[in-house]
Length: 456
Image (cartoon, rainbow, N blue to C red; front, side, top):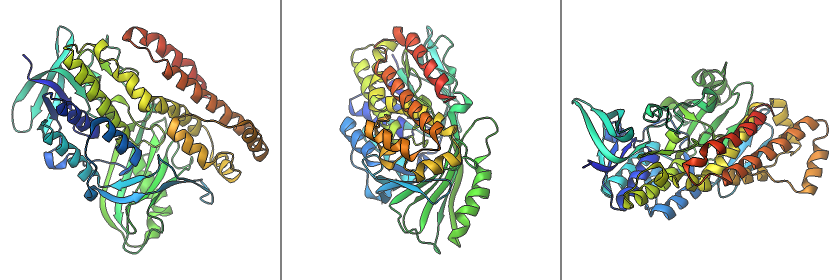
């Protein structure tokens, strides 16, 4: 006799969504988080999300609409700004319309929804280790603040512990789940939230992302207004060899370029964080075990945003886990459909954007300035790519780009090459195996694509 149908470690948006989905389907769920209950949701974040994620989540789970008190400001688009800061691409469309929000209130609301659905929440509790029975996951050992360690058992355990993947790293070497994430597949970030009484943002409904390979190699700076006199500003960089500390970048480059121009400011919050930026974990399930959110690498590889994708991951995981519980079969084979379901909704696009990430890492400020100035890359291209992970140019359009890009032919060839690689990896994900038996052969198909992308 187990204590719960499902134990979920981590009450972020992914974990809370999975818990809500399962509880609404009648399952007993224990949701554990190391933070105090009133502080769940307080974390480093860009504090913005596209409306399409919320709509899709509501269609999957029936979760209510977000209360207006969570939303700071409506967002109508994103401006991508070249290193010279003279050229920008304005992206307006389904994936860029959304909202900036209060991160703590958002987290509290999601946990509250889970509780209302019948989830038991255990806060101020650290999950220390996985429990195993006959080589299969059977529960967790926890450390409750001010009390003794305690064991809880469940038919399924979900790791939603974030980028560290505390439980994922404890899986045995025989598990098909990747335990470790390569350093090059992580982003470190620093962000501040300010009130700017002396400065008014003219277009607070447009978020700004600045590329500068000299300052934020493999990353970017963001300026996300949350109204006319409030802003979330930060930067993130890939953790490749020789990368700079984002806090140093914040109080050097970002401060001189933006913050100092805003006059007197009031600091509301400052913090750093880390996120995975790669394709999803190749399998997010094993016997009695699932991964959700950052622990599953369910994060956009280009901008590091993971709230919307972790919601989708949590919803799909909850639905598949519920179906497996109803069949009384929580084996890896029974949980396997979670993988292709997530890939169809987001993972395929995520993998293609992972390829595009390597292209962005290997281009210069001059390349970016030239591409923006000559419109070799247009806002519509990036919007389409962000929606589908696919790059498509018609024959006539290709000729126009070739003429515009005369003098930078190598750059055009690289754009064409990376577009082909993105389509190649989408095709591989479209052939994701329908059982664990095909995983090893499927992973082999990824190797040549990544080897080429990293030097393209």
